[in-house]
Amino acid sequence: MKTVEDILEQIKNDKICVLEFWFVDLLGNIKSVEIPVGSDDERLKHLLGDGILCDIASLIPAPLIGKAKYKENYKNVNLAPDLATYLALPWTKPGDECHQALQAFIGNKPKFIRPSISKARFMCDIRTTNPDKCFSSRQSLKDYLFKLKASNSNWEYIVGPELEFHYLDDKGCAFDEGGYMDTEPDSAKTTQLREMTALMCETIGIKVECHHHEVGHGQQEIDFEKRDALTMADNMITYKLIARDVARLCGVQASFMPKPFSDAHGNGMHVHQSIWNEQQNLFYGEGRRNNLSLIAERFTAGLLTYASEITAITNQWVNSYKRIVPSYEAPVYIAWGSANRSSLIRIPKYYPVTEQSVRIEYRSPDPACNPYLAFLVMLAAGMEGIKNDLELPSEIAEDIYHMPESTVNERNIGMLPSNLGEALAAMKRGSIVKDKLGEQFMEDFVRIKEADWVDFNRHVSRFEIEEMRKYGI
Image (cartoon, rainbow, N blue to C red):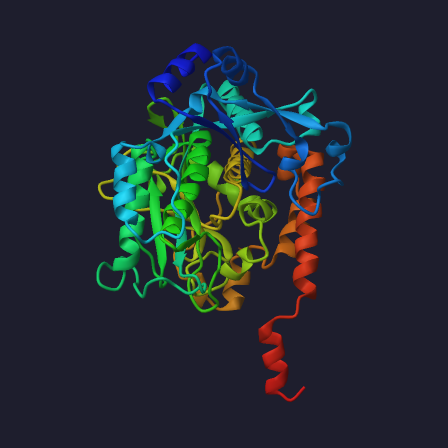
Protein backbone atom coordinates (compact mmCIF):
# COMPACT_ATOMS: atom_id res chain seq x y z
CA MET A 1 0.00 0.00 0.00
CA LYS A 2 1.40 3.40 -1.01
CA THR A 3 2.02 6.01 1.66
CA VAL A 4 1.80 9.79 1.41
CA GLU A 5 5.61 9.89 1.23
CA ASP A 6 5.55 7.42 -1.69
CA ILE A 7 3.09 9.60 -3.57
CA LEU A 8 5.07 12.78 -2.88
CA GLU A 9 8.14 11.13 -4.37
CA GLN A 10 6.15 9.97 -7.38
CA ILE A 11 4.74 13.45 -7.96
CA LYS A 12 8.27 14.83 -8.04
CA ASN A 13 9.52 12.09 -10.36
CA ASP A 14 6.60 12.64 -12.73
CA LYS A 15 7.14 16.43 -12.58
CA ILE A 16 3.48 17.04 -11.88
CA CYS A 17 2.35 20.67 -11.75
CA VAL A 18 -1.33 20.22 -10.91
CA LEU A 19 -3.25 17.58 -8.95
CA GLU A 20 -6.87 16.92 -9.81
CA PHE A 21 -9.14 15.53 -7.08
CA TRP A 22 -11.97 13.72 -8.91
CA PHE A 23 -15.30 12.66 -7.44
CA VAL A 24 -18.85 12.13 -8.65
CA ASP A 25 -22.19 13.53 -7.58
CA LEU A 26 -25.25 11.46 -6.79
CA LEU A 27 -25.98 10.82 -10.49
CA GLY A 28 -22.39 9.94 -11.41
CA ASN A 29 -21.44 13.26 -13.01
CA ILE A 30 -17.70 13.83 -12.65
CA LYS A 31 -16.53 16.80 -10.57
CA SER A 32 -13.02 17.95 -9.75
CA VAL A 33 -10.92 20.31 -7.68
CA GLU A 34 -7.52 21.35 -9.10
CA ILE A 35 -4.60 21.92 -6.74
CA PRO A 36 -1.26 23.47 -7.81
CA VAL A 37 1.60 21.33 -6.52
CA GLY A 38 3.89 24.23 -5.62
CA SER A 39 6.98 23.81 -3.45
CA ASP A 40 5.42 23.47 0.00
CA ASP A 41 5.78 19.76 0.78
CA GLU A 42 4.11 20.06 4.18
CA ARG A 43 1.01 21.62 2.64
CA LEU A 44 0.88 18.90 -0.01
CA LYS A 45 1.41 16.18 2.58
CA HIS A 46 -1.55 17.55 4.54
CA LEU A 47 -3.78 17.60 1.43
CA LEU A 48 -2.85 14.04 0.47
CA GLY A 49 -3.34 12.73 3.99
CA ASP A 50 -6.36 14.69 5.14
CA GLY A 51 -7.99 15.86 1.91
CA ILE A 52 -9.57 19.18 1.13
CA LEU A 53 -12.82 20.78 2.27
CA CYS A 54 -15.52 21.11 -0.36
CA ASP A 55 -19.03 22.60 -0.35
CA ILE A 56 -21.56 19.79 -0.08
CA ALA A 57 -23.63 21.45 -2.81
CA SER A 58 -21.18 19.96 -5.32
CA LEU A 59 -22.63 16.53 -4.54
CA ILE A 60 -26.25 17.53 -5.02
CA PRO A 61 -27.58 17.76 -8.60
CA ALA A 62 -30.44 20.09 -9.51
CA PRO A 63 -33.24 20.28 -8.46
CA LEU A 64 -32.01 19.28 -4.98
CA ILE A 65 -29.58 22.11 -4.23
CA GLY A 66 -30.87 23.82 -1.11
CA LYS A 67 -33.48 21.09 -0.51
CA ALA A 68 -31.64 17.90 0.43
CA LYS A 69 -31.79 17.27 4.17
CA TYR A 70 -28.08 16.74 4.63
CA LYS A 71 -27.47 20.19 3.12
CA GLU A 72 -29.06 21.74 6.19
CA ASN A 73 -26.56 20.39 8.71
CA TYR A 74 -23.34 19.80 6.76
CA LYS A 75 -21.97 22.82 4.94
CA ASN A 76 -18.76 21.11 3.89
CA VAL A 77 -17.44 17.65 3.18
CA ASN A 78 -13.90 16.38 3.00
CA LEU A 79 -12.56 15.12 -0.34
CA ALA A 80 -9.97 12.54 0.67
CA PRO A 81 -7.81 11.25 -2.19
CA ASP A 82 -7.55 7.47 -2.47
CA LEU A 83 -3.77 7.17 -2.78
CA ALA A 84 -4.07 3.89 -4.69
CA THR A 85 -5.73 5.80 -7.55
CA TYR A 86 -2.85 8.21 -8.22
CA LEU A 87 -2.56 8.50 -11.99
CA ALA A 88 -0.28 10.75 -14.00
CA LEU A 89 -2.05 11.92 -17.16
CA PRO A 90 0.66 11.54 -19.81
CA TRP A 91 -1.13 13.46 -22.55
CA THR A 92 -0.81 16.61 -20.42
CA LYS A 93 2.97 16.34 -20.10
CA PRO A 94 5.08 18.12 -22.74
CA GLY A 95 7.59 15.75 -24.33
CA ASP A 96 5.77 12.59 -23.29
CA GLU A 97 5.19 10.16 -26.18
CA CYS A 98 1.47 10.12 -25.46
CA HIS A 99 1.35 13.93 -25.46
CA GLN A 100 3.26 14.06 -28.74
CA ALA A 101 0.99 11.46 -30.32
CA LEU A 102 -2.10 13.41 -29.34
CA GLN A 103 -0.67 16.70 -30.59
CA ALA A 104 0.32 15.08 -33.90
CA PHE A 105 -3.11 13.50 -34.23
CA ILE A 106 -4.90 16.78 -33.54
CA GLY A 107 -2.67 18.75 -35.91
CA ASN A 108 -4.42 21.94 -36.92
CA LYS A 109 -7.91 20.50 -36.45
CA PRO A 110 -8.83 21.41 -32.87
CA LYS A 111 -11.24 24.07 -31.75
CA PHE A 112 -9.45 24.22 -28.42
CA ILE A 113 -5.89 23.23 -27.57
CA ARG A 114 -5.33 21.80 -24.10
CA PRO A 115 -2.49 23.70 -22.38
CA SER A 116 0.61 21.64 -21.70
CA ILE A 117 0.55 21.41 -17.90
CA SER A 118 1.58 18.11 -16.35
CA LYS A 119 -1.31 16.76 -14.29
CA ALA A 120 -2.18 13.75 -12.16
CA ARG A 121 -5.51 12.68 -10.76
CA PHE A 122 -6.86 10.93 -7.68
CA MET A 123 -10.30 9.44 -7.22
CA CYS A 124 -11.64 10.77 -3.92
CA ASP A 125 -13.62 9.36 -1.06
CA ILE A 126 -16.08 11.71 0.61
CA ARG A 127 -15.91 12.00 4.39
CA THR A 128 -18.19 13.70 6.88
CA THR A 129 -18.74 13.45 10.62
CA ASN A 130 -21.86 11.42 9.85
CA PRO A 131 -21.67 9.33 6.62
CA ASP A 132 -25.39 8.51 6.82
CA LYS A 133 -26.15 12.19 6.21
CA CYS A 134 -24.03 12.56 3.10
CA PHE A 135 -24.26 10.08 0.27
CA SER A 136 -21.12 9.03 -1.61
CA SER A 137 -21.52 6.70 -4.62
CA ARG A 138 -17.92 5.52 -4.62
CA GLN A 139 -17.78 5.00 -0.87
CA SER A 140 -21.04 3.03 -0.96
CA LEU A 141 -19.64 0.61 -3.54
CA LYS A 142 -16.31 0.43 -1.72
CA ASP A 143 -18.03 -0.44 1.57
CA TYR A 144 -20.27 -3.06 -0.01
CA LEU A 145 -17.35 -4.77 -1.75
CA PHE A 146 -15.43 -4.80 1.55
CA LYS A 147 -18.38 -6.52 3.26
CA LEU A 148 -18.58 -9.05 0.40
CA LYS A 149 -14.92 -9.96 0.90
CA ALA A 150 -15.12 -10.03 4.68
CA SER A 151 -18.22 -12.21 4.91
CA ASN A 152 -17.55 -14.60 2.03
CA SER A 153 -13.89 -15.63 2.30
CA ASN A 154 -12.41 -13.06 -0.08
CA TRP A 155 -15.08 -13.14 -2.75
CA GLU A 156 -14.46 -10.50 -5.42
CA TYR A 157 -16.99 -9.10 -7.90
CA ILE A 158 -15.41 -8.95 -11.37
CA VAL A 159 -17.00 -6.99 -14.22
CA GLY A 160 -16.28 -6.31 -17.86
CA PRO A 161 -18.59 -3.66 -19.35
CA GLU A 162 -19.07 -2.99 -23.05
CA LEU A 163 -19.62 0.76 -23.46
CA GLU A 164 -21.24 2.03 -26.65
CA PHE A 165 -21.26 5.67 -27.70
CA HIS A 166 -21.70 7.90 -30.75
CA TYR A 167 -19.46 10.41 -32.45
CA LEU A 168 -21.58 13.40 -33.49
CA ASP A 169 -20.77 16.49 -35.53
CA ASP A 170 -21.53 20.06 -34.41
CA LYS A 171 -25.11 19.69 -35.67
CA GLY A 172 -25.73 16.55 -33.64
CA CYS A 173 -25.62 14.24 -36.68
CA ALA A 174 -23.73 10.95 -36.86
CA PHE A 175 -20.12 11.60 -37.78
CA ASP A 176 -19.79 8.63 -40.15
CA GLU A 177 -21.89 6.23 -42.23
CA GLY A 178 -20.30 3.02 -41.03
CA GLY A 179 -22.08 -0.09 -39.75
CA TYR A 180 -21.21 -3.06 -37.58
CA MET A 181 -17.45 -3.65 -37.49
CA ASP A 182 -16.98 -1.57 -40.65
CA THR A 183 -13.57 -0.18 -41.45
CA GLU A 184 -12.53 2.36 -44.03
CA PRO A 185 -13.83 4.18 -45.98
CA ASP A 186 -17.24 4.46 -44.29
CA SER A 187 -15.86 4.80 -40.77
CA ALA A 188 -12.42 6.26 -41.48
CA LYS A 189 -13.25 9.53 -39.72
CA THR A 190 -14.14 7.85 -36.45
CA THR A 191 -11.79 4.87 -36.53
CA GLN A 192 -8.83 7.15 -35.84
CA LEU A 193 -10.66 8.91 -33.01
CA ARG A 194 -11.50 5.57 -31.46
CA GLU A 195 -7.94 4.31 -31.88
CA MET A 196 -6.52 7.42 -30.21
CA THR A 197 -8.98 7.06 -27.31
CA ALA A 198 -7.98 3.41 -26.86
CA LEU A 199 -4.30 4.40 -26.94
CA MET A 200 -4.84 7.00 -24.22
CA CYS A 201 -6.60 4.36 -22.07
CA GLU A 202 -3.83 1.78 -22.59
CA THR A 203 -1.17 4.35 -21.72
CA ILE A 204 -2.63 4.88 -18.25
CA GLY A 205 -3.26 1.19 -17.57
CA ILE A 206 -6.91 0.87 -18.58
CA LYS A 207 -6.58 -2.34 -20.57
CA VAL A 208 -8.64 -2.43 -23.75
CA GLU A 209 -9.80 -5.88 -24.82
CA CYS A 210 -10.98 -4.73 -28.26
CA HIS A 211 -12.81 -1.90 -29.98
CA HIS A 212 -14.85 -1.62 -33.16
CA HIS A 213 -17.57 0.25 -35.02
CA GLU A 214 -21.04 -0.62 -33.80
CA VAL A 215 -24.31 -1.09 -35.72
CA GLY A 216 -25.45 2.52 -36.01
CA HIS A 217 -23.93 5.33 -38.03
CA GLY A 218 -21.28 7.01 -35.89
CA GLN A 219 -21.70 4.38 -33.16
CA GLN A 220 -18.62 2.91 -31.47
CA GLU A 221 -17.77 0.33 -28.82
CA ILE A 222 -14.70 -0.03 -26.65
CA ASP A 223 -14.50 -3.10 -24.40
CA PHE A 224 -12.22 -3.39 -21.39
CA GLU A 225 -10.50 -6.33 -19.76
CA LYS A 226 -12.41 -7.46 -16.70
CA ARG A 227 -11.45 -5.96 -13.35
CA ASP A 228 -12.81 -5.68 -9.84
CA ALA A 229 -15.91 -3.47 -9.72
CA LEU A 230 -14.36 -0.49 -7.89
CA THR A 231 -11.37 -0.26 -10.22
CA MET A 232 -13.65 -0.66 -13.23
CA ALA A 233 -16.00 2.10 -12.06
CA ASP A 234 -12.99 4.42 -11.60
CA ASN A 235 -11.74 3.42 -15.06
CA MET A 236 -15.12 4.11 -16.64
CA ILE A 237 -15.22 7.64 -15.24
CA THR A 238 -11.68 8.22 -16.56
CA TYR A 239 -12.38 6.63 -19.94
CA LYS A 240 -15.51 8.69 -20.60
CA LEU A 241 -13.57 11.87 -19.86
CA ILE A 242 -10.81 10.77 -22.26
CA ALA A 243 -13.29 9.89 -25.02
CA ARG A 244 -15.04 13.24 -24.73
CA ASP A 245 -11.75 15.17 -24.54
CA VAL A 246 -10.14 13.53 -27.57
CA ALA A 247 -13.31 14.09 -29.58
CA ARG A 248 -13.70 17.69 -28.43
CA LEU A 249 -10.14 18.57 -29.35
CA CYS A 250 -10.99 17.47 -32.89
CA GLY A 251 -14.25 19.39 -33.06
CA VAL A 252 -16.40 16.28 -32.54
CA GLN A 253 -18.75 15.24 -29.72
CA ALA A 254 -18.55 11.82 -28.03
CA SER A 255 -22.07 11.14 -26.75
CA PHE A 256 -22.99 8.40 -24.27
CA MET A 257 -26.69 9.29 -24.54
CA PRO A 258 -28.71 6.05 -24.40
CA LYS A 259 -30.82 6.78 -27.50
CA PRO A 260 -29.61 9.74 -29.60
CA PHE A 261 -31.57 8.80 -32.75
CA SER A 262 -35.17 7.60 -33.07
CA ASP A 263 -34.70 4.96 -35.77
CA ALA A 264 -31.31 3.54 -34.83
CA HIS A 265 -29.76 1.36 -32.15
CA GLY A 266 -29.18 2.99 -28.79
CA ASN A 267 -26.05 2.91 -26.64
CA GLY A 268 -25.94 0.05 -24.17
CA MET A 269 -23.53 -0.99 -21.46
CA HIS A 270 -23.71 -4.77 -21.32
CA VAL A 271 -22.00 -5.90 -18.13
CA HIS A 272 -20.20 -9.25 -18.09
CA GLN A 273 -19.88 -10.35 -14.48
CA SER A 274 -18.70 -13.14 -12.24
CA ILE A 275 -17.50 -13.72 -8.68
CA TRP A 276 -14.00 -14.93 -7.97
CA ASN A 277 -12.12 -16.23 -4.97
CA GLU A 278 -8.49 -15.38 -5.70
CA GLN A 279 -7.74 -17.42 -8.87
CA GLN A 280 -10.98 -19.44 -8.85
CA ASN A 281 -14.01 -18.40 -10.88
CA LEU A 282 -16.96 -19.31 -8.64
CA PHE A 283 -19.34 -19.08 -11.59
CA TYR A 284 -17.64 -22.00 -13.35
CA GLY A 285 -19.32 -25.36 -12.95
CA GLU A 286 -17.62 -27.98 -15.07
CA GLY A 287 -20.11 -30.39 -16.62
CA ARG A 288 -23.16 -28.45 -15.43
CA ARG A 289 -25.77 -26.78 -17.63
CA ASN A 290 -24.03 -23.99 -19.60
CA ASN A 291 -21.02 -24.62 -17.33
CA LEU A 292 -22.68 -22.45 -14.67
CA SER A 293 -22.09 -23.34 -11.03
CA LEU A 294 -24.92 -23.37 -8.53
CA ILE A 295 -23.62 -20.02 -7.22
CA ALA A 296 -23.88 -18.57 -10.74
CA GLU A 297 -27.42 -19.88 -11.17
CA ARG A 298 -28.53 -18.44 -7.84
CA PHE A 299 -26.86 -15.11 -8.67
CA THR A 300 -28.62 -15.02 -12.06
CA ALA A 301 -31.94 -15.82 -10.41
CA GLY A 302 -31.41 -12.89 -8.04
CA LEU A 303 -30.78 -10.50 -10.92
CA LEU A 304 -33.94 -11.67 -12.68
CA THR A 305 -36.02 -11.44 -9.50
CA TYR A 306 -34.96 -7.90 -8.65
CA ALA A 307 -34.39 -6.56 -12.17
CA SER A 308 -37.37 -4.20 -12.19
CA GLU A 309 -36.52 -2.54 -8.90
CA ILE A 310 -32.87 -1.83 -9.82
CA THR A 311 -33.66 -0.53 -13.32
CA ALA A 312 -34.05 3.09 -12.15
CA ILE A 313 -30.37 2.92 -11.15
CA THR A 314 -29.00 1.07 -14.20
CA ASN A 315 -31.16 3.21 -16.52
CA GLN A 316 -31.61 6.52 -14.73
CA TRP A 317 -32.71 8.90 -17.51
CA VAL A 318 -36.00 9.49 -19.31
CA ASN A 319 -34.11 8.83 -22.55
CA SER A 320 -32.88 5.45 -21.24
CA TYR A 321 -36.29 3.92 -21.94
CA LYS A 322 -36.30 4.98 -25.59
CA ARG A 323 -33.55 2.37 -25.98
CA ILE A 324 -35.32 -0.45 -24.13
CA VAL A 325 -37.76 -1.27 -26.92
CA PRO A 326 -38.12 -4.38 -29.13
CA SER A 327 -36.16 -4.90 -32.36
CA TYR A 328 -33.07 -2.84 -31.46
CA GLU A 329 -31.12 -5.56 -29.59
CA ALA A 330 -31.90 -4.00 -26.21
CA PRO A 331 -33.58 -6.24 -23.62
CA VAL A 332 -37.26 -5.81 -22.85
CA TYR A 333 -38.08 -9.18 -21.31
CA ILE A 334 -36.95 -10.46 -17.91
CA ALA A 335 -35.56 -13.80 -18.99
CA TRP A 336 -32.27 -15.56 -19.51
CA GLY A 337 -30.88 -17.67 -22.29
CA SER A 338 -27.71 -19.18 -23.63
CA ALA A 339 -26.49 -16.76 -26.33
CA ASN A 340 -30.03 -15.28 -26.50
CA ARG A 341 -29.79 -11.58 -27.37
CA SER A 342 -33.50 -10.98 -26.83
CA SER A 343 -33.25 -11.80 -23.11
CA LEU A 344 -32.16 -9.61 -20.22
CA ILE A 345 -29.38 -12.02 -19.24
CA ARG A 346 -27.30 -13.82 -21.81
CA ILE A 347 -24.83 -16.62 -21.13
CA PRO A 348 -22.03 -15.90 -23.62
CA LYS A 349 -20.62 -18.88 -25.48
CA TYR A 350 -16.87 -18.98 -26.00
CA TYR A 351 -14.86 -21.79 -27.53
CA PRO A 352 -13.10 -23.55 -26.08
CA VAL A 353 -14.97 -23.21 -22.78
CA THR A 354 -12.55 -22.42 -19.95
CA GLU A 355 -12.90 -21.41 -16.33
CA GLN A 356 -11.76 -17.91 -17.34
CA SER A 357 -14.50 -17.47 -19.94
CA VAL A 358 -17.61 -18.41 -17.95
CA ARG A 359 -19.71 -15.45 -16.85
CA ILE A 360 -23.17 -13.93 -17.26
CA GLU A 361 -24.00 -10.81 -19.26
CA TYR A 362 -26.59 -8.36 -17.91
CA ARG A 363 -27.80 -6.34 -20.90
CA SER A 364 -30.12 -3.55 -19.74
CA PRO A 365 -27.73 -0.89 -18.29
CA ASP A 366 -26.69 2.07 -20.41
CA PRO A 367 -23.45 4.09 -20.30
CA ALA A 368 -25.18 7.18 -18.87
CA CYS A 369 -25.66 5.45 -15.51
CA ASN A 370 -23.63 6.04 -12.36
CA PRO A 371 -21.26 3.03 -12.62
CA TYR A 372 -20.60 2.85 -8.87
CA LEU A 373 -24.30 2.47 -8.13
CA ALA A 374 -25.06 0.27 -11.13
CA PHE A 375 -22.41 -2.26 -10.10
CA LEU A 376 -23.56 -2.10 -6.48
CA VAL A 377 -27.24 -2.84 -7.16
CA MET A 378 -26.49 -5.60 -9.67
CA LEU A 379 -24.19 -7.26 -7.15
CA ALA A 380 -26.73 -6.79 -4.35
CA ALA A 381 -29.51 -8.36 -6.44
CA GLY A 382 -27.31 -11.31 -7.33
CA MET A 383 -26.21 -11.82 -3.74
CA GLU A 384 -29.86 -11.90 -2.62
CA GLY A 385 -30.31 -14.77 -5.05
CA ILE A 386 -27.40 -16.64 -3.46
CA LYS A 387 -28.47 -15.81 0.09
CA ASN A 388 -32.06 -16.97 -0.45
CA ASP A 389 -31.27 -20.00 -2.67
CA LEU A 390 -33.44 -18.63 -5.47
CA GLU A 391 -34.19 -21.10 -8.24
CA LEU A 392 -33.23 -20.17 -11.77
CA PRO A 393 -36.34 -20.25 -14.01
CA SER A 394 -36.44 -22.16 -17.27
CA GLU A 395 -34.11 -21.01 -20.00
CA ILE A 396 -35.64 -19.18 -22.95
CA ALA A 397 -33.91 -20.23 -26.18
CA GLU A 398 -36.31 -18.60 -28.67
CA ASP A 399 -36.33 -15.00 -29.90
CA ILE A 400 -38.79 -13.46 -27.45
CA TYR A 401 -39.34 -10.44 -29.70
CA HIS A 402 -41.18 -12.70 -32.17
CA MET A 403 -42.97 -14.81 -29.57
CA PRO A 404 -46.80 -14.54 -29.46
CA GLU A 405 -48.02 -12.59 -26.45
CA SER A 406 -49.99 -15.59 -25.26
CA THR A 407 -46.79 -17.67 -25.17
CA VAL A 408 -44.96 -14.92 -23.28
CA ASN A 409 -47.72 -14.94 -20.64
CA GLU A 410 -47.88 -18.75 -20.45
CA ARG A 411 -44.15 -18.93 -19.78
CA ASN A 412 -44.33 -16.19 -17.11
CA ILE A 413 -41.86 -13.92 -18.89
CA GLY A 414 -41.97 -10.51 -17.24
CA MET A 415 -41.05 -7.15 -18.76
CA LEU A 416 -38.70 -4.42 -17.61
CA PRO A 417 -40.24 -1.04 -16.75
CA SER A 418 -41.13 0.76 -19.97
CA ASN A 419 -40.45 4.27 -18.70
CA LEU A 420 -38.77 6.14 -15.85
CA GLY A 421 -42.04 6.53 -13.96
CA GLU A 422 -42.60 2.76 -13.84
CA ALA A 423 -38.95 2.17 -12.87
CA LEU A 424 -39.18 4.59 -9.94
CA ALA A 425 -42.41 2.98 -8.77
CA ALA A 426 -40.78 -0.48 -8.89
CA MET A 427 -37.77 0.81 -6.98
CA LYS A 428 -39.97 2.30 -4.24
CA ARG A 429 -41.97 -0.94 -3.92
CA GLY A 430 -38.80 -2.99 -3.65
CA SER A 431 -36.16 -3.34 -0.97
CA ILE A 432 -32.77 -3.64 -2.71
CA VAL A 433 -32.02 0.06 -3.31
CA LYS A 434 -33.43 1.26 -0.01
CA ASP A 435 -31.61 -1.40 2.02
CA LYS A 436 -28.24 -1.03 0.30
CA LEU A 437 -28.15 2.72 -0.38
CA GLY A 438 -30.26 4.09 2.46
CA GLU A 439 -33.45 6.10 2.93
CA GLN A 440 -31.70 9.45 2.41
CA PHE A 441 -30.43 8.36 -1.00
CA MET A 442 -33.87 7.02 -1.94
CA GLU A 443 -35.55 10.27 -0.98
CA ASP A 444 -33.09 12.46 -2.88
CA PHE A 445 -32.80 10.23 -5.95
CA VAL A 446 -36.57 9.86 -6.28
CA ARG A 447 -37.04 13.62 -5.93
CA ILE A 448 -34.56 14.30 -8.74
CA LYS A 449 -35.92 11.65 -11.06
CA GLU A 450 -39.59 12.36 -10.43
CA ALA A 451 -38.86 15.98 -11.37
CA ASP A 452 -37.32 14.69 -14.63
CA TRP A 453 -40.40 12.56 -15.26
CA VAL A 454 -42.81 15.44 -14.60
CA ASP A 455 -40.84 17.74 -16.93
CA PHE A 456 -40.83 15.10 -19.66
CA ASN A 457 -44.56 14.44 -19.39
CA ARG A 458 -45.48 18.09 -19.78
CA HIS A 459 -43.07 18.68 -22.66
CA VAL A 460 -44.74 18.97 -26.07
CA SER A 461 -42.51 17.40 -28.73
CA ARG A 462 -42.19 18.14 -32.43
CA PHE A 463 -43.61 14.66 -33.10
CA GLU A 464 -46.87 15.50 -31.31
CA ILE A 465 -47.28 18.79 -33.12
CA GLU A 466 -46.69 17.20 -36.54
CA GLU A 467 -49.02 14.32 -35.69
CA MET A 468 -51.84 16.72 -34.83
CA ARG A 469 -51.28 18.72 -37.99
CA LYS A 470 -51.36 15.55 -40.08
CA TYR A 471 -54.90 14.88 -38.92
CA GLY A 472 -56.01 18.49 -39.04
CA ILE A 473 -56.38 18.75 -35.28
